[in-house]
Length: 336
Image (spheres, rainbow, N blue to C red):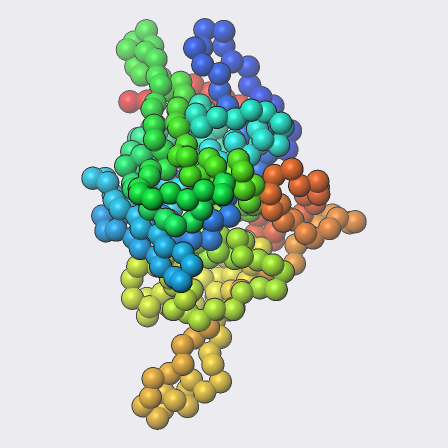
C-alpha cells in the first residue's frame, strides 16, 4: 500500500453514528497504536509483501510457534496492521473502564488513517485479501495467554466481514468491517495486560525494519540488546540465507531508520584472524541501543507503557525519525 504520514491529532473526536446504522462503531481509535508483548517479540507473520505459501516455524527451549498458510498464504507483517489496530481499540476501551468483547466493528477509513495507508480502491481490495489471510492462517504455540495454554491451531480472526450498502446507482459503499478476535490474543490483552505502544513511524518501515523495532521494543529493559546474528535472524523470522540477512542488516544500520533505536553490527575481535587462517569465523553480533528521545523541557524520556492502567503519563517526546500531519475527517469511499 502507498504510505501517507501517520501522525494524528491528539484531540481526535468520536464521530456521530447515523441513526439508521444497525451497529455501533468501535472506531475511531482514541489513543496510540499498541501491541501485545508476545506478538511483538516473536515471529508470527511472514516478512513478505506478496503471498508467502510456506509454513513458518520458530523453536527455542522455551517457545515454539508453528504457522500454517491458507490457500491465500500466511498472514504477512502488513496484514498484522489490522491485528494491531484491533488490539489498540481493545486496549483503549479497557483503559476507559469499558466492558469489551471479542467482536469489533470499525471503518476502513479509520484503519487506513491510523496505519498511514491511502484511501484508494486498491487499498480496500487489499483489506479484503488481508482479512482472508488473517482468518485462514493457522497458528499453534505453547505461549500461554491469560494464564491458560492451548493445544491445537487457531486463527487470528475467527470471523471477518465487510458490511456495505448500495447507492442509488448500484455502487457498493463500504460501511464497516466486523471481526472477531481469537481467544488467545483476547485473553492476553484482557488478562495479562502486557501491552506496549508503537512509534508512529512504524508503519513507514519495511518488513525487516518492522521486526527489528518490535524485537527491540518488546525486550528493551533499558540496557539494549546484544545477540549473535543467527539468534537474531531466528527472532526476526527471516527465512532467506543468513548472508542475505547480514547484507540487509548492514543496509538498515547504515540508514539508521529504526524509530527509537540504533542498530550496529559488531565483528568479534578475532574474526578477521580466523578467516585468514581458513577456519570458520566467529558469528557477527547485533547490538541495539535505545536512542535518546527529543522531549519538551521537563518531560521524562521513559515512554514505556507495559500494561494497561499504568498511571504514568506518556511524555511529550518524539523520535527524531517521526513526523506527520493531522488526519482528515471521515468520508464516504466508493468500492468497486
